Structure formats: C-alpha cells, structure tokens
View 1 (cartoon, each protein chain N blue to C red):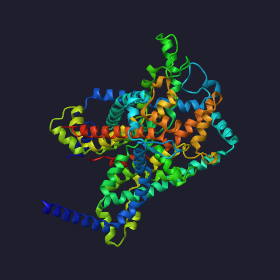
View 2: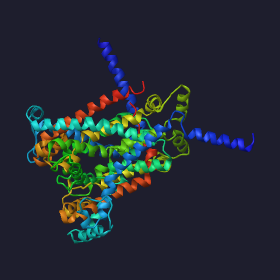
View 3: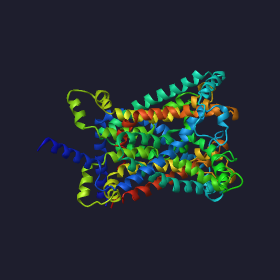
View 4: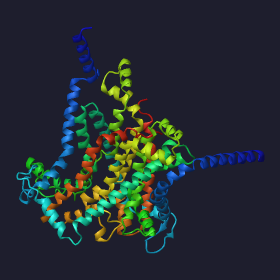
Length: 312
Length: 297
C-alpha cells in the first residue's frame, strides 16, 4: 500500500517538475498574458468570489461584514415572497424569450443566408440594430401608453374591442407580455451575427454531397447538413442568450416602473438591485447574485448537452 | 465546342449555382414575404424614433400620430445644443469625457486583450487552457451579478469618481478577448515560425506579424468596446458633474418633462446613431470575425 502511495507521489512530483519546466520555457507567454490576467481577475473573478463570500454575511457597507452562515439563502427561499415572484417572472421571461429569441436569431440568419449580398448586408443591419440601440426601447412606452393617445389603445378603442384605455404598464396582466415583446425585439444580438457568419462558412461541397445522398427539401438540408456543421456557433449563441435572458431588468424597470405594481414585473436582477442599491443589504444582494449565477451555469450545462444531440 | 455553346453552358452553370436544386419557388416567396414583414416590424421603432426627433412640437402631440413628420425640422437638435450650452458643465466637457473614456478604454482593451489572446491561441503552456475556460464562463456573468463587489473593489483602489473606474475594467471585457483568441487560432502557425527563424522575438512577431493579420478582429473588438463605453452612463462610479458622460447628461435632459419631448427624441437619435453607424461601416469585418466565434466543447 505505502509503495503505491510513494509511487503516486513520485509521479506527481515528476508531473509538477515537467509542468514547472514547461512554464519556465514559456515565460514569454505568461508575460504576455499577465496584464490581461491581472485586470480580468480583479474585475471579473474576484467579484464573483467576493460576492459568494458576502452572501454568507450581513453586510451594509458601513459596518464590516458579519458572518451569519446560510441565513441569507434560507430567508431568500423561505421568507421572501417577492423574491419568489422575481424567480417566477425571470423564469417566465427566460423560458419564453430565451428559446424564442434564439430560434428567431437562427431562423433569420438562415433565411437571409441565400439573399443577394447587398440585400443581406442591409437586412443584417435592420435585425441587429435594435440590440445595439441602448435605451431606445423606451419608445415602446409611447406605443403602449396608458391613455387613449397610445397607439395600441387608440387602435383597440377604434376597433371597439375595449371601451376604456388599458393601463398597459400598470396592469399586472399586461406587463410581462409587453416586456417580452420588447425583449424579443432586442434579442438578435451577438448570437445572430455568429449564426450569420457560421452559415456563410458551411462548406458548399457538403451540400452537394447531400443532394447526391437524396436530401429533398430545405428542412432536411437544415437538419442533416447545416445544423451539425454549425454546432460551435450554436453553443456560443446559447451562452449569449442565457446571459441576456436571465439578466433581464433594464427593460422591465424602465417600462413598468420600479417598484412595479404588485411586483408583477420584478425579476431576480431587479430584486438584486433593490437590495444592493436601494436598501444597501449587500450580503442579501450577493446571495441573490450567487443564486442567479448558479441558475445560469446549470442552464448552460443543460443546453450544451441538448445541443450535442443536434443532427443525430 | 462553339462559342455559343460554351456560353449557354456557363449560363446554365450559373443558374444551377444560383438556385439550389431543393428549393421550391413557392417556398422562396414565402420566405421573402416573411422576412419583409419581420424587417418592417423590427425597423419600425427605429424609424419612428428618428421621425419623432424631426417633428416640430405641435406634430409631436398630434393625434392620431403620424409616423412621418409633415414639416421635418432640425429644431429639436438645435434646441438641444442651446440647452446643453446653458448647463453648468459645458457640452464640450461631456463630449470630452465620453470620448476620452471610449478612446482610452478601447485602445487599452485592444492591446491588452490581444496580447493575452495571442499567447493563448498560438502557444501551449500550463494553465493556458484553464484560463481560457474561465474566460468563457465569464461570458455568462452579467454585469449585475458583479456590480456590487466591483464597486467595493474600485472603492478600495481609490478609483471612485475617476475615469479609471470605467476605463480599467473595460480593458478585460471577456467578449472581445474571446473573439480575438478564436480568430487568432485561424492564423497559420507557419507564419509565426517563419518569422521566428528570421530572428524575430515574440513581441516583434506579435506587433508586425500577428496584429496586421487580424484586422477584422480588431474592428470587432473596437465596436464591442465602443458600444459598451459609449452607452455607459458611468453614474455608478462617478459623481462629480464635470466627469460625467454624455449619455448621462442626455438622459438628464430627456427626463426634463413634457416640454422637452422633442429634445428627448433628438437625444435618443444621437445616442443610437454612433454604435449603429460604426456597425454599418465595419459589418463585413465583424462577420469575418464571428465566423470563428464558435465554442467547442
């Protein structure tokens, strides 16, 4: 037994030595990476570690953090009804706008792929522009204004469907659906560009081989040829979609107000914002952030295993 | 073969190339109609916003609203500049702040992230792949998750109320780093080896061989960084009025009530035009970069 352990350790030592030697040879590499690594660690890794640590404390910025164990998590899940509403809303938004936005991005990219070059270029701008237009989505509050001057209301009254204007952003039934429309409008982001580029890069000879093998229509072509060769882009698009669909808060806060009526438009991030920047309960806010992060990672794992099955 | 025959052959070939064999005309028509309708729906809010900024005040409050302005005017933009001129901090100062933050942040991001991406893409060294995996995971950190601890860290560093609070974290934006690394992997290694045989050191290889060959990726990094920095209201870390960004000042005007509706519309147009115009000019390069954006598992 001890012999094995000894052997194990000599092997380990050897491995470490080899790694150290390799590292010494590639000194240059570390020097190149160092500036990025330092800044990245400080502003992207450290905050995550910190926020996991703070999530186990009571911390209000003024006093130093006091360790309280898993208390934040317990009260989040068992006592905080508003948080549960937030989770429900976030999941509703993510489950509807996430897959729909993702499919939309792919569908549009796929359909415009065969358009003539310059038309394609214009269409890409049209589809991509909403996602880089910053806060322009506030224009939707004009379309859905609560009085009879709003377009949607004027239209509905004109048709005789309603006799009084609907308070779109105050009425809990309408808030989330309208926010989803706005989010979908903005959802053709980086993933869309990645899909467009990926489709252009699919090897043309593969299609020809497909015709020989009896691919009959565009759907078969899509499933057996296009999608499998797009897998890496599909993965990348999925990561981008998950991030944006679970991180929703700007749109709901800007359109439905903060806090919204009956918390009907509250999302996880809105809740985080509430506790972090309004109530200064940093420990609690960090627990929310940690939960969100966990959800995103799990979701990403699930989608990766789903995408592995594409085209088989 | 006669000349005419050759010609018909090429025409035929051309036709076959243009129309894929498994496409029906009806299907194509449906696709075009669908795309047309969707494109109009997507572009409508943008067009409406631009038209709004061109409407004189009486048309803005007109009912039923018209999409297109009847007497288009640039008054709203002119009023905006007059109004900005009256604020305690001059308009040019806001422009300078945003330009400074955007330019320095983008330049630093380009240099620092490219250096790191270069060694990760082209060399193998212990820890390299692990680091890259962490960066890909970081693509999932939405800014909100890290906002609070980030504030605390920046506070510790003493950068609150300085430009650095915005600029330095922007150097390490994971998306730009990720895209640059993926793109650099497509560079032929023989290029680098040839330069090394000629006696060039790594820095030389990086500056004179690698960087000139990845221009599409530069542009992509630039647009992501400009987008993020231009639209960053920076109000979280900066509280002195004279250090605030243009977007922040513009949103202040926007919230100025009903009399400023026209100017608010102008503000929105200015805010969106910069990223969209940059995108239009760099579209083909960005798509070239995106071709290597795939994530392998």
